[in-house]
Image 1 (tube, helix red, strand yellow):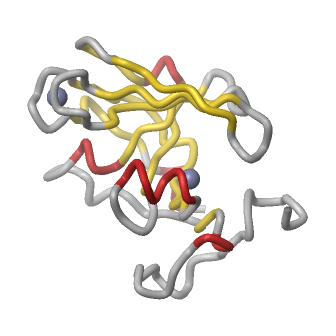
Image 2: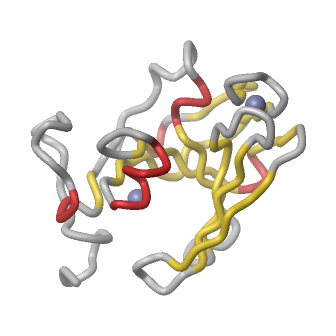
Length: 147
Ligand SMILES: [Zn+2]
Ligand SMILES: [Zn+2]
């Protein structure tokens, strides 16, 4: 898969106000889009677009507040956001220890490398939200049996 070859070097991301910055040097572990209802609410759109990295590849700077919730998988999902402007800057899932989830929008202006390989939680996806038709879709998580 092409994603395995995507490596970033000093790629900078930040929240909307700039109080929180993220610098990434390392291989992209995975890239996908998620249409679950939590992502619809927190992103304000029809889906979230995220990339996963090993925690060691990401350098975080600046204060964040966080919000924890239970994911459909039973995992704990923690979303970190800028206390000033509210932008989600990173997230962690107890389902993926050692990995950090970064929303692609924080790299605005420097995110042409993003090539998602799947849409998860397609059961919640709505047709008005356009997703590339070639993208594999999974009802919930990849490999899950639907519920
Ligand atoms: Zn901010
Ligand atoms: Zn989601």
